[in-house]
Amino acid sequence: MLRKRSAADGPVEVRGGRLADEFDRAADRYDLLTRLNPGYHRALLTAARDLVSRLPRRGGGEPLVLWDLGCGSGLSTRALLDAAGEDADVVGLDASGGMLSHAEAKPWPEGVRFVQAFAQDLPKVAREQGRAEADGAFAAYLLRNVPEEQRDDVVAAIRDQVRPGGWIALQDYHVKGRRVSTAVWTAVCWGVVMPLSVIVRGNPAIYRYLWRSVVDNDSTTQLEARLERAGLTDVRWRTGTGWQRGILHTVMARRPDADPA
Image (cartoon, rainbow, N blue to C red):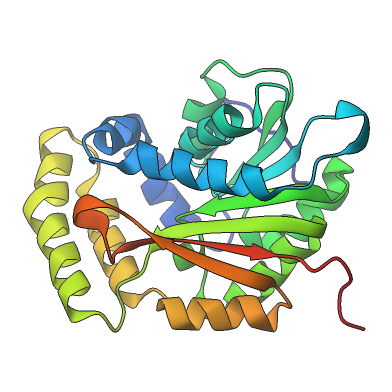
């Protein structure tokens, strides 16, 4: 059974477990390394605010219901709360027990909870949580960690967990087909990120994987095609600022008010 995990739980030991274990080993220094990344937190908050600003409000002043997929140590969860308000109902999902231990150790309002599971298991998680369709979903740095042959299914599952008229926000690094962006990304990873991970003992293996996973990640064109195949509409793109321009991308997409027959 998929359930809210506790800090005493062990690591994931199902498919993708090896990657989850690497994230477990990186968890202690993950927040520190993100603080050393100029613009990381600002980009999360900008995307979260953009998502929340588009969401149709529920009647009676009820709080927004949101998914945070690939929530990691809770940094994206914090961005969602800052954008939506402390009364928001947020479920954070991640496969790494180590990351979730750090997320759960932070102070959260009553409406926030975390579940240890793979994104591929989202429909099962939603059923077991008894969770109705959410107003929106945020997935930062998630899809490139999903096997390519399963990404369409994950996008469709995210769509199905958002109510008609709701929005999905996906944020990640996309450099495929962009020579300059690929060169900058490679220089930053090998010249800055990986040396820093060694200095702070942050599990350099996960950052070598980070570099490769981004180089191999969907192009923006490929991702947009996935969104369209899932029946999502009103697709809108935004790129990052500073060194992340042309590398970091946030895409918004809407579930239509009435799905095609």
